[in-house]
Amino acid sequence: MIVAAGIGCALSSFTSEANYTDYVPYNGWEATGVLTYGNNFNKSITNKELLKITRKVGSILSYENNIRQKIKAEIQEAISGEASLASYDFQILGDLEVKLIGLSDGTIEARVGNISISAYAKIKKSWYAKGKIRVSSNKLTLIGKYNPYSGKLSGLRANSGFKMNVDVDVDSILDLLIPLFNSQFTNKLEDSLKVGFENSIISALNSRLDGYEDVLLGLDRYLPKNQYIYRGEDYAIKVENAFKDLISNESLTVKLTSRQKSLKFNKDTPNITINRVDINVSNNLFLNIYDDPIIETEFRPECNGNDCTVEP
Image 1 (cartoon, helix red, strand yellow):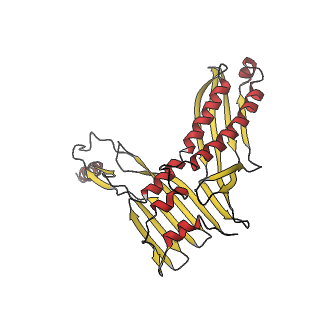
Image 2 (image 1 turned 60 degrees about the vertical axis):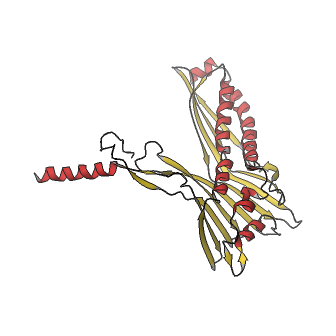
Image 3 (image 1 turned 45 degrees about the horizontal axis):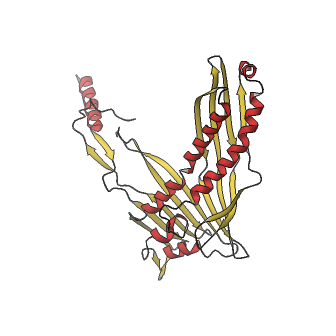
């Protein structure tokens, strides 16, 4: 009797939990900006205007999908008529960084990247003739110039040590069916993938959602003014000006990230994307901006613990 009661309580608790779901309400998306100056000043602001910055982060990071599709298409083209693509997996390793460095001649050097890639594909000629293709790279850094007046990056070139590697491992029977497949495929793919990787990143960073902002990520337009005041100075303006007035040996680093956040018991939208930008001005002034949506919990009596699937 006691055991039955215990089970009943557990089921009741589980059913009650299953009747609730997390969700982001209409107009519930906001972003938070935290500005820190040395050990003296720290202030956090949450509003919708900052979303224009985090949305640009998402737009820039779309280069990942461009590269994913580019590598897949290159592999498919290389094996066209010889074999078919059975499966494909791809990932970017590392978070995209943009580092601006003031030079003695008054110009600003840009270093973009600090990322590498990894891709894995399975190919087949038939059920008994199969192969594996691995594509990888070392760390990529694109080096060029930053125009403080237009916010554009130009003259970007990959670091001299950057290399794409293609490794093909095929069954001996596939080597017999397609003579010289390994060497021809490897040579053909390495050069084209290297160019595609570089161009996808350059294109994404130089894109403009609205066409008029003059600073990377539109910080000159979207960072709220008169909100980060310390000792009579507006530190939002100091961050903006840092993109334009870097002097010799000063630096500014921008790190862009995108992560998935789970919504409990939500079948329709189990995950949402949280974009973030971290700005470091000469290791003294820091600005962190990230999506900070309102997450509410809704009671769903129609579930009754039976009809609604509880997400893990």
